[in-house]
Each structure stands twice: as C-alpha cells, then as structure tokens.
Image (cartoon, rainbow, N blue to C red; front, side, top):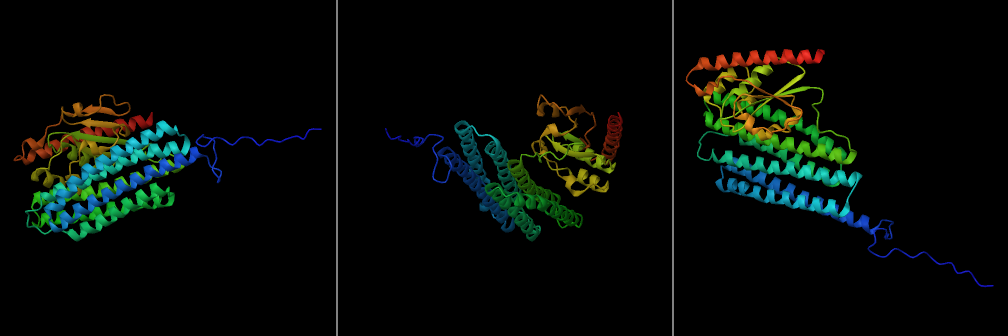
Length: 385
C-alpha cells in the first residue's frame, strides 16, 4: 500500500497581493500603509512650513522687521509647491491602490486639508504684506495682544495637523472647540483698536492694516478648525462640514472698493432675523473711506464690518441661499452655473462715489433696509408654504 503524501499548498509568490507577512498582513497592505505614511509625513511638513511663515509674519509685526516680512512672503511659494507635491502623491495613490472605505476618505480628506493649509500660507503672506504698511508708522501697536492671538492660532494649527496625522478624533474635537476663543480674541482686539482710533491714537491707515491682520489670524484658526472637520469625516464618514443646513444664508457682494456690501450686512444684522445668516464680500476689496467707517460705527455696526472681505474667502457659494449683486461687475466674477444659490441684482447707489456728501450714506442705508425687509418677508412666506 502506497503512503499518502500530503502536500502543503504553495505559498503565494512574494510580491503577489495575497502574499502574507508573518504578522498576517499582506504585502499589498504594507505597501498601502507605507504610501499613506508618506502622504501624512508630507502634510506634516507642509504644516511646519505654514507655522514658520506665521512666526516670520508675527516677528515682522512685533519688531517691524522688513526682512522677516519678506521671508514670510517668499515662504508662501514653498507652501504652494508642497500642495502640488501632495496632490501628486494622492493621485498616484489613487491610481495604484484604488482604495475604498477609510483609505479612500483619507486621500480625499488629505486633498481638502492641503487646500486649507495653502490658504493658511496665503494668510501668513497677507499678514506680512499688511505689516509692511506699518514699517514706517510711529503709532504704538499692541504687539503683545497679537502675540497671544498668534500663539493660540499656532497651537490650533499644530493640533489640527497632529489630529490628521494620528487620526485622533478627540484632539480634533478639542481643536474645533478652541475656535470660539480665537473669535473672542479677535472681537476684543478689534474693539480696542477702534477705541484707539476714536481716541486719535491710531490713524485710519494703521487701524485698517491692523484690523486686516487681526482678521487673517482669525481666519487661520478657522482653517485649522476646517482641517479638524475633515479629520472627523475621514474617521467616521459622517459629514460635519456643512453646519448651515436648515438656515437661509444671504451674501451681499459688490466691487470696486464700494462700501455697499458692508452697509447691507450691517443693515441686515440690525433687523434681528433669527433664521437668516448674512455675510458680505467684494470682488476687489479696498479699505473703506473714513466717512463710510464713521457712518457704520454710528449705526452700531460691529468693528468686523469695517473690513471688506475678498469674494474668494466667502467659501462655497453653493452654501448660500441668496447672493445679492450690488454692482453690475459682480455677475462676471460669479460662477456661471450656480445650482442652488439664487442671484439677485439690486441697483443701489454707491455712497463711496460721493464721499463728501454725508447724506448719501443715509440714503443708501435706507434703501438697502427696504430691500432687505422685502427679502426677509419673502423668506418668511417661503417658510410658511
């Protein structure tokens, strides 16, 4: 009788996707994890570049150091190059690995996170450029306050990048919660700056530059929060990036350095609509005329409404219910196909064109309020149907 020889099944050839290492993982899995680690290391490096740019911009502001400002401006190019490199790594990962589930969310979230980091680099550059406006000024600047705000912002940035790299949901949630403190710092600092302006301790040109710098630091904290929202999406698959559903959002847009969008936002906020959020932006923002700033302050506008924001910072325009174009040039700057937002054209005179006529501001304010009241009544009618 012949002995039965039991043959072991052949082991998969090394390099085959199913070839398993001693720990039970496949070489395919190991290669995927190596590439994910490479992408995360690149994001960490991009975050470090952003942190360095912010510190250079802060040093330029504290010491009125022109060279540090130049260095922060030049650093933005390296940040942009890093974004391109990470996009390349992500694209190659998608092509090679064809991931699903968590790895697919990771690479999708990474692409969005590098966009947030690129914007942080832009804000650091903007802080440096506005600081250059202050180099020759003799006015006293509250640099200690800016240092406090910068340190909070930098901590949020570091924690956001670490939350991404380590997939730490708890750290992401704590960082999101810290954004309220950054917003409060901005409000207090802007309030104090306006008081210094009213007490004639700051000329308007210095006030404008400092408030723009304050806004940029606050926007960096917003980007850090956005990174953490992406981390939560990567980890859970739950969408946390659109907190505005169920509310109407209205965006007022002008161009050419007009103050109409800021006046419209201030007038709308004064009406106290609870379920409607208002924002303003400009296609090509410019500092407000002194007469416009004084008029808005007299109407009780918050100091944040003295700063025209670029349209590019308004976020995803599809998240707005209504976009109001206050200038004929606005239409050309908007995307051609807005699927959700309704665009309206309001022909309201620009008081900035007649800065020596104080009555023109009051007339525009009254006309804007009439338009906004009609819009709010229409929104209430929609809610009732």
